[in-house]
Image 1: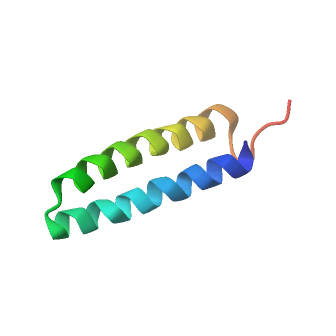
Image 2: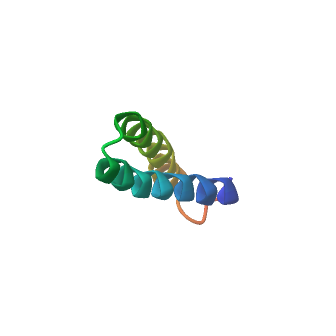
Image 3: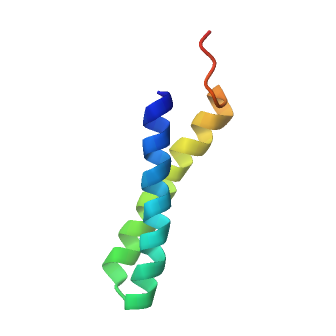
Length: 59
């Protein structure tokens, strides 16, 4: 779960970067998908850190 959380955090960070690029290019569909991706993956990462801590508890 530890490595998966890091990968999901990277996906959320890239979605935020793409969000600003979509705003700059005025691309509405990319804007919507970037918000959705950043929200879903970011929420998963935040809740995993709050629930299990980082590094995660083994027992």
